[in-house]
Amino acid sequence: MAKRLDLLQGTLDMLILKAVSLDRLHGYGILLRIQQISGERLQIQQGSLYPALYRLEHQGLIASEWGESENKRKAKYYRLTAVGRRQLHDEQQNWRRMADIIAGIMNTAPEEL
Amino acid sequence: MRAGVTLRSWLRAGLHRSRMEQDMDNEIHFHIERYTEDLVRDGISPEEARRRALAEFGAVEGHKEECRQAIGLRLLDEVRADLRFACRMLRQSSAFTTVAIFSLALGIGANTAIFSMLNATMLRTLPVEDPHRLVQLQSSGRAFRPGYFSNSIWEQVRDRQQAFSGMLSWSTDRFDLSVGGESHFAEGLWVSGNFFRVLGVPAMRGRLITTDDDVHGGGHAGPVAVISYSFWKRHFGGDPNILGKTVRLDRHPFAIIGVTPPWFTGLDVDRGYDVYIPIGCEPILHTESSMLADRYAWWLRILGRLKPGEASQEAESA
Image (cartoon, rainbow over all chains, first blue to last red; front, top):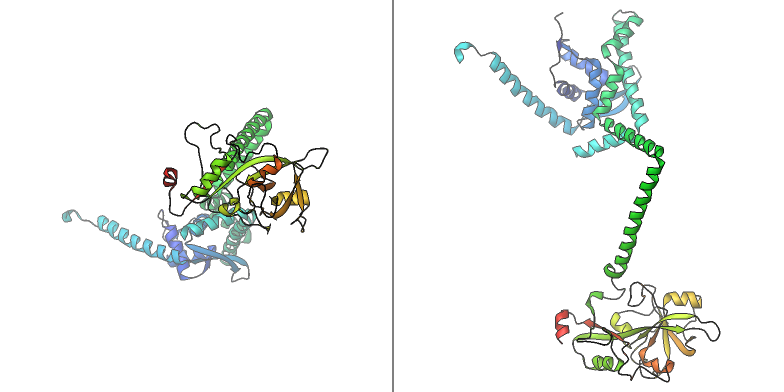
C-alpha cells in the first residue's frame, strides 16, 4: 500500500461537508466515509475531526442529533443544513479553480514561457 | 440567520455546560470503541486494538479543549475565572472594598435624588388636559409681587380678555379644620369659578366649583368646597355619602359638593391639596378685612389657556 498523504491544510471542513451531504453520519462514520472514498489514501488525524465538527455546527453549516447506531448504541449524527449546502457549493467551485491554477503552474514547460 | 444559529449554539453550550461535556465524552468514547471493534474484527487482540485506537485518536483532552474553543466556550471560562479572581481580591482587601462600595452608593444616591427633583419640577407636566397650552400671566414692569395679582385686576382681566379660550386664577392657603382645641390644618386652594373647566378636570363624585359658586359672599348654593381624592380617603375614610356633608374651614362651615379624581393634585406638581373653595367665598373667612376689594392685596395667580392654533407670543402682545 502506498504511503498515505496528510490532509492539505484547510480541506478537512470541505471534506466533512461533502461526506454529510451524501448521508446522515456520526463522527466515526464521517471518518470511514472519507477514507473509503479516498481509497484509503488520505491520513486524517482522528481526534482533529471533532473540533472541526463542533466548529461547523457552531457556524450552522451542519446540525446534529442523537440517534441509534447500527449496533444499537447511542451516537451523535450530523447532517448538512441549507446554509451548509450553499457553503459546500462555494467551496467546491473555489477548490476546482484553485486546483486548475496550481496544476497549470506545475505543468508549465520551459518552452511555453 | 447565521448569527442566530451561532448565538443559540453558544448559549446552549454555556447554559447546559455539564450536558455538553457529557455529550462530548460520549461522542469520543463511541468513536474509540467503534474503532477498537473494527480492529478486533481485523484480527488484532482486544488489548492491542484498544491501545492503537487510543493512540491514533490522539490526545483526548487536547481535542476536547479544541472543541470547546471551536464554540467559543474558552472566552466564557476565562471571564468566569476572572470574575472569581476579582471577588477573591475584593474580599481580601475589605477596607478598599468598603470604601469603593460606599462611594458608589453615595454617587448613585446623589444622582437619583437630583434626578427625582428635576423630574418633579421640570420634566413632569401638570396632570390636566393639554397642559402645554396653559400659560401663566406675568406682570410687566416693577410689580410689588411678580406673578401675583389683586382680585380687581383678575376680575377685569377675566371679563375683558379675548386672547385666551379661558382663564383661571388661584391662590394657596392653609385652613384650620378643628372645631376647637388642637389645630389641624388642610392644604387649601382658592380657585376661580372656571378653574376646573379651563383645566379640563372632571368630578369623580358630585360636581366641581362653577362660576355660579364664585360670587362675592357665596353663590346660590352658599359656601361650597370640593375636596381631593386623598383628603376624602384620609379625612372622611372614603365615606360614600360625602356629598352634602360639611367641612369646617377656620370654623366656617362649607358644604362638600364634589371630589376630584385621584390623579389631580393641583397646579404644583410637587405637592397636593386637600380642599378647593371659590375665591368669592373669601369674605366669609376674612369678615373684617376681605382681600376681594383690596387693590393692594397681591394674592392671585392667573393662568390662561391658549386658543387652538395660537402661539403664546400673540397672546403676550394681546
